[in-house]
Image 1 (tube, helix red, strand yellow):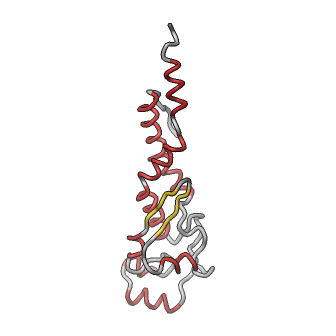
Image 2: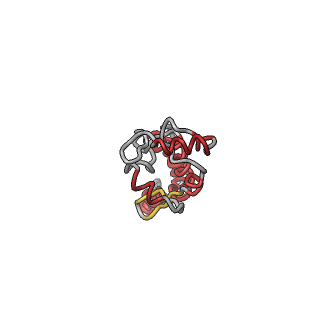
Image 3: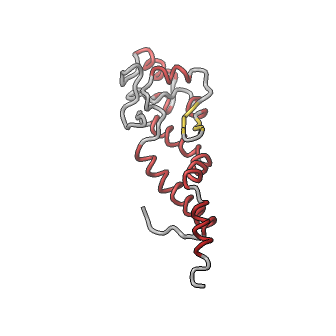
Amino acid sequence: MPFAGIEKMISQLQAFDPHAELLNIVSSNTEVLADYIRDQLSQGLDGNDQPNTIFGKEEYANATVFIKLSEGSGLGAVVDYITNYMTGDFYASLKVNVEGDLFDADSDVPYFGDIRLYSSEALLKVNAEHRLQFAKEYVIPGMAVVLLQKTNLKLTGAV
């Protein structure tokens, strides 16, 4: 019988749930997503590649500039653009949570609510460049492994 294995393959493909696998890959790599956000913040950019803002302004208030210059070090002393960094506590506590189809950046620093309040809606979103990088480095290889394991089909080609 030349098509003996085709029914099994069809059954395996029908059981393969790419959406669930994608969520599993994302859930397993939330620290990578948090690192992308930290990288964007350190460059003064939000998830839309726009300058970070505080109450719609692209620069720190004079009092903040004074404090950052006198007490900050490294990224904590950068005043040319908004980093939301002074001591590093916010960056260190940044994490990405996955609930259903929603991915949300969160922090447990006490002033996190203030950061959300005075910043742009896109402050803690992953930008297009990092989303593409995540797809190339984590999603596609991860899907290839799972597809091979569950269906014995090999994903080939490059993105």
